[in-house]
Image 1 (cartoon, rainbow over the protein chains, first blue to last red):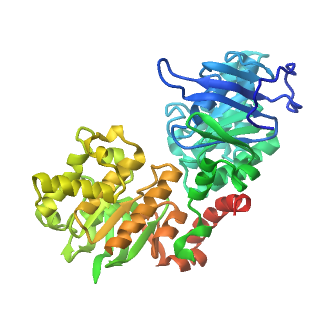
Image 2: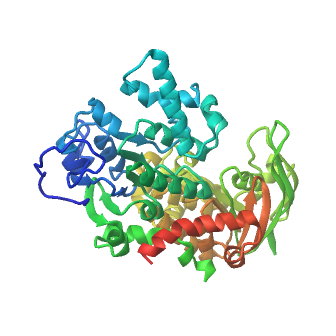
Image 3: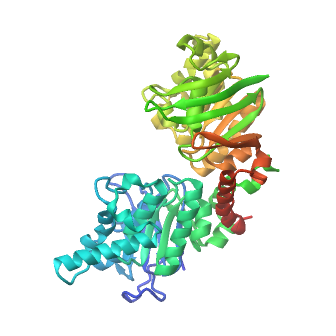
Length: 282
Length: 263
């Protein structure tokens, strides 16, 4: 049930639980954002993320997709409107929030520290969240290493990956490392900003499959920023189309992309280069 | 007439290993050839070798005959006679291809002045013609590259490449840096211009769907070597090499999801 909504629902904050019921896990309610003295980057944007329903934020460069993602991550505060986590106003420093909502960035070449071993990179969220909380220092460290190994395994990387450095891996493998880091603390929502657009096509297909699989096996809900409508169609049952800082259309992806109501969405769908329409294949 | 013939072309890195190996292909007058491959397959190096523009340290071996001139090992003066006239090039990233400190009009004027020897009012008029040909308004001439959009910048780069009236246009991922709607506009423009002038086109892209829309024949590159070539239709419909097949399958797999929702 993603969608533009007029008002902010004042529902009671049913906390926790992967089920989530009807309360959105994450929600932007009439959110706006502008840099000081600038014109608004986002205006009156309402998006809600329900557990189990992956959401795509679709639009072109400069539309405000990444800014919206930053608001949902608590990396920026909305100038107007609100961001809600489990029905309550988002507190960016709240550990429960940081644990539940994790980011994956676009460029796996710049989002991994080249001087740290992969094991340390992947377990970083555990350290910053103070997990695991109990036990001796050595026991905690062993537990963190074990969870990092499990996360690496879940993204299909070999066990010895933890001891190696990012430069030893290909682009697709690096993006898997970034995904392992995001899932290591057991989040409920992954916010992924163009997670596959830096990858070659065959790698892209495999990373999309991995994201879909992790969504199912770990009960993760994905919020994906993408300009690639094929990726959107493959991963997200819900889509929100953003143009110049405003939501122009949203709802089930099947309807938004299949029978777009807004001219901008129609143009976007029409413009995608497709083999099925390629002039030289006819 | 063959405009461009690459014959057993190799490009060697200073450390001694070959980044392009034994590549042969030809482009006839008015024909359209696509080079397809993933990152690191040697697509761009091939284009640069054709123009004699390889980065310092890289060396080409084998033969590249462009407009009747052997490019490999040619002097700067010899290359100046074929660059622009026989072939000109549009690069991937228009922001780095244009001079940030020079107004667009002056940049477009450069190649026109050199090629056609125009001055003053006639040159100004030719610049305006060149801009209108790529559907840019006159005011763009007075703007700096950072003041216009990415799509407009790529149109400027195309106008500059066409100003020399080349027989062959080499386009290296010309729409990869652009948004999808802008990409569609620029591809349509490019298609019309190439057809209208009867130019030949060497089109380089990682995107099979884009190449299949533009090029009649394709060469599939993998790690510097051609693994398959032929008519675009045949290669995409019935790929013979396993690598081509995986490329085509991946493209269909992703697109299939979209085709399912929005046929």
